[in-house]
Each structure stands twice: as C-alpha cells, then as structure tokens.
Length: 146
Image (cartoon, rainbow, N blue to C red):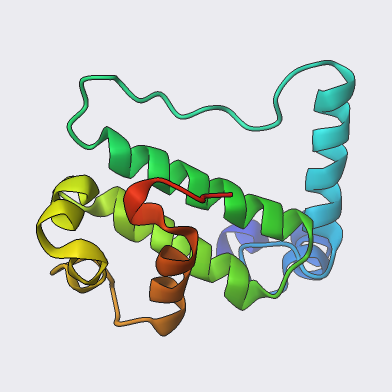
C-alpha cells in the first residue's frame, strides 16, 4: 500500500475497497470477474487457462501434471466461491507436489501413499487438510483427479 500511496495516490481508495489488506479481491468480485473472463473466452472458443508445458522426457512430469490438476481444482473452487480453507488446501497440495525433487510415482512405488504423505520436505507443515486432499483425489496414482 505504501508504494501505491507514493506513486499512485489516486487509486488507494479503490484498491483498499477491492483488496483490503489482502492480495486477492474482497467478497465475490474476484470470482465474479474470473467467471466473466471464462464466459468471454468460451464465446470466442479460447481457453481461459493456459496449459502448463510439460516435456515428455521430464523426470518430474508426473508431479507437474498432478500439481496442474490440483491448481485447476483450486481455480474451480475459487469460481464457485468455496470456503477459502478448501481452496488453500488444494493450492498447498499443488505447491508441495510441484516442489518435490523426486518423482511422486517412485515414492509411491517404494513406500505407498503413506510414503508420499510423509516424504521429507513434502508438506511445509504437517497439514491434515492437505493430506486429505491427496488421499481423496488419489493423486499419487494420477487417478480420480477432478
């Protein structure tokens, strides 16, 4: 807010109303805007989300595909104006899988789903909600993802 106050003082009021002290819009304005963007894109036969480039030879490609599906689920929940804890559970799970330095398939093959959930460095904090998201979506197998 300090930057805006110095360089763009005329937008501080509007910014405060839209964002408050957060980086996301307050209330339903953000999801409403995202839904409108989706409608316009659909009308013009273009996707509203850009597919993530994943090389077939990437040893962490599975992790990236799983993370992408979790991010898309978080996006869908945002559009539905779901409870923020649900959106953040999917985002955090996506970040965790995306940042793994080992292929999640290898971890699963060696230690099963418990190995994935307990993998060192996997969860920033031992978050119950994050583990439930992974278990419910059967992400370790790449099956059942929304």
